[in-house]
Length: 116
Image 1 (cartoon, rainbow, N blue to C red):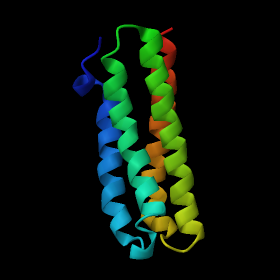
Image 2 (cartoon, helix red, strand yellow):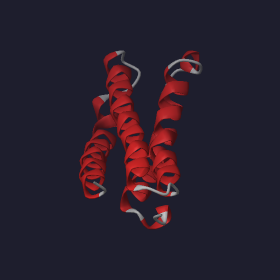
Image 3 (cartoon, rainbow, N blue to C red):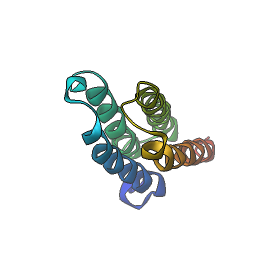
Image 4 (cartoon, rainbow, N blue to C red):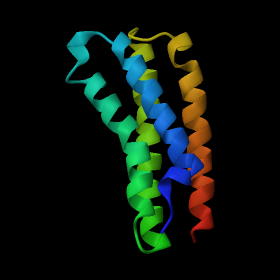
């Protein structure tokens, strides 16, 4: 069992979730039940799955939850790119966040390999 609050991947996931919540305020209100809902759910999913996985009794189970967190990051990346393609966000809005997301994808993948 790991203390999730001490894991760098959890801390970075929390930072991404916070930045995402601040960013989605820019999206049009007509997207409240579409992109806004989807983006917020997958952003919150990242640190939540790291935390939940850290409570599991085996590294295999923890790895499963890290896979879910990783999938949520790729989903979030896609939704931000789509929001920019639709003209809801500019590349300036998402550039820094996308960099953080890609870095965290790599860190979770690397951390997951240490659990095997």
